[in-house]
Length: 263
Image 1 (cartoon, rainbow, N blue to C red):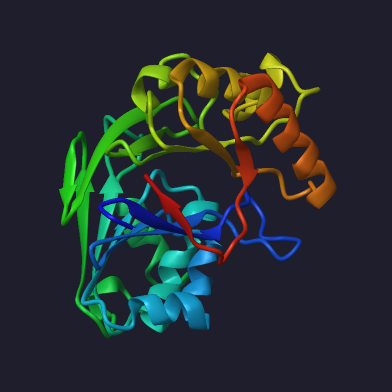
Image 2: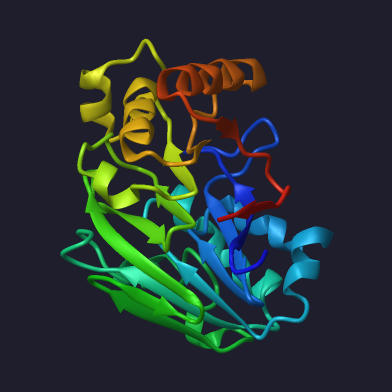
């Protein structure tokens, strides 16, 4: 990796795990340290041989949440099963970045929704609120940005290697935040035929707007994430090709479980 990152997509879909795809979670590795961006149902893939092997020699896992919608946090309840040998720190956004704070995790990971509170987990686990950036987590330096989404969400930038922008309307202010990164992970919930009214109502982004952001920010490449569970492989390929053509730079649909070297 020579100073860069290794990205392992665990879940790339939005809302519902379907068609063999899980909801949002990405394992990022640098210098033997591991960062988990969001904890959707994709966390279940940490039990698979490949990801489990990557974490076998690790001592800790830092989880950074962007917000508290279930497709981004349900996998927290899987951690006692897939990360019980690790020291876990959950970095949870708080106002003014999001409307809710870590109390949302306490509500989810407690009876009657879950039998064991975090304090009762088999591994040492800490929940730490973050209200602004930058975040210094081991070898990772993260910039954060509040985004427009119901309840709020947070955009993340990991140095010049990558930016993670999901659950937000396509915002022109994102251009400066992600400028010149090697890889932009940007949500593409809405397709070419769905306009601004749909984006505003849902708090999500349309393909044409994502292409414009990527082009203006001069990112090296863009990956489609948080795409609609109703889209099959052919529909995703059409969306990818449309963004690549509009942006004039490489676009890809990430394959879950397949690592990618970044930056």
